[in-house]
Image 1 (cartoon, helix red, strand yellow):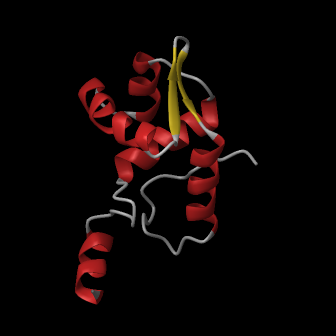
Image 2 (cartoon, rainbow, N blue to C red):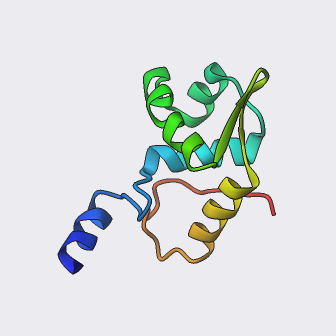
Length: 102
């Protein structure tokens, strides 16, 4: 199990299978609020296809919702990423600086 955990850490994948891209997406929504796909592409520097690939899993986890006005992070999503960065040593060292309002 220790070897597997080290591999996940090297690949920057957390215990839920979230990657740096997922964290960029979530952090962007946490920082700027509800956003459409084009705005997320610009702010999080992710491609439209990446967003369409990762958002179903984030929705399944209950971390984001898709509304007619755009994507929005849920309280559960905010709580998860806040906890990850408050306790981080970090699974995602210096990938980006999260800004999560409390």
